[in-house]
Amino acid sequence: MADRFHTASARFRHRRDPDPATLGSQEDVAETLDSLAKHYGLRGYLLINVPSETSTDFSSNVLLTSWPDEMLKTYDHAGLIFGSPVIERLRQSTNPFTYDADRTNRRRADGKAAIAASLFERHGLSRGAYFPAHNSVGLRGALAFGGTRDVLNPREMAELNAVANLIFTEVVELRAGRRQNVSLSRREIECLSWASAGKTSVEMSEILGLSEYTVNHYLNRATRKLDAVNRVQAVAKAIRAGLLN
Picture (spheres, helix red, strand yellow):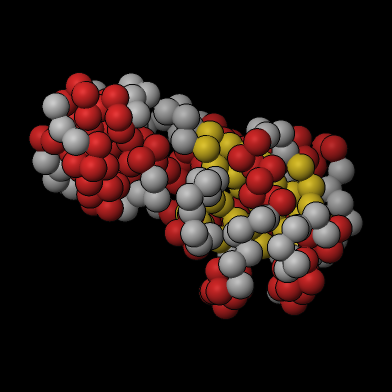
């Protein structure tokens, strides 16, 4: 049987055409992720932007997943994003790691360990691994696979880690390409440009002669127009769409 890992890896590594219209589709990526999950004896996949400290729900950070809608809704309804040891680890480290829903959630300090573990076990995702990823402009994400099989061995971890950045970058570019006709005002572009240079809202207000409130208003509006979850992702999407140099 052909090795689906090498097929998927080649698919992403040899992509050369920069035109978003010819890069394929998110459906193609989803099919590849589904094949990878099955090849490694896992049940499902998850591709996300790493939630920021101010994120109040998990669903808005999901790029692609085979998780059931019911699972995502239950996760957010229970407020499991707050105090999640997995999300906290993704914020602090770029190293891949395995998880066990029962053992991992014992580290929760919010009293929701049993709720979280039960949710993952009920949907057959009690064990798996996360692979942190990033793209060329620094947007951070993660690719995860889950199921009920024994822990992935070092070789399997290395193989899946090798495609995490490629897949994350592919999906971010595809999603940005869909939004390339977004119209931003001059002020919104100015604020995103300074944000891409690492300036804070306070610094931007001094540079542009605007109040901090007004700067945040322009940034929030641009973020919504670009269908982004935070200003970092908004900058990445604006650059990909050719709205920023």
